Amino acid sequence: MKNFWKDFKAFISRGNILDMAVGVIMGSAFGAIVTSLVNDIIMPLVALAMGGKSMSELCVVLNGEPQFLEDGTENAAALILPYGNFIQSIIDFLIIAICVFVFIRIMMRASKLGKEAAEKLKNLKKEETAAPAEAVAEAAPAPAAAPAGEETEKLLAEIRDLLKAREEKEPPKAE
Image (cartoon, rainbow, N blue to C red; front, top):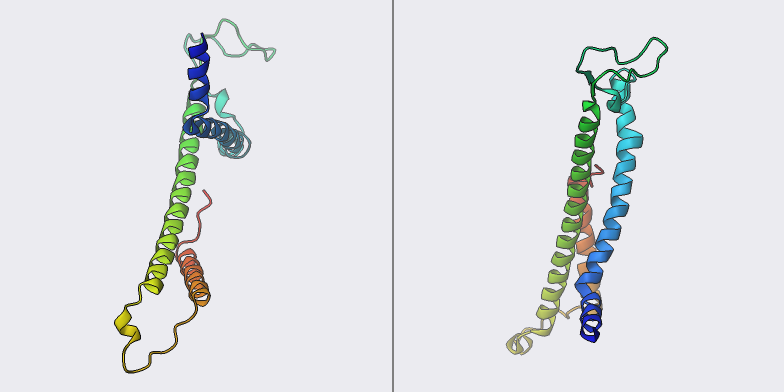
């Protein structure tokens, strides 16, 4: 029994398990946001377009009995196929899939931009530190190199300008 608890403790304290738990929690919160988007914003607009009838009200009576009695109550003898709920579930799935796709795409682009900026900074630092000895010993005096701080500031300004230019060409999509 001691081995069980020891193995369980090792399993739980692994980093990837904690990352997965955070992912599940964030995923459920994201799901709640998307469900609210579908139920509270999109579906009322769909109902309005359908003449005020909710998607869940769509159905077919299979046995020919009237769906509602004269007093407005639902007829228990009517055999009903409520296909509207199925359509609603398909719409929910598609909207959730689109939202997840857009979110992941935005995160991947941000990660790519971060990696490009880090690579550019790394290359700049290599250029600064790997100045060849013969270039320093040339007869003609070379212009004074900017201090590392100024080079870093110039690089960061260039990265900022590139990001602004990219954003102007392709503004962020809020889908």
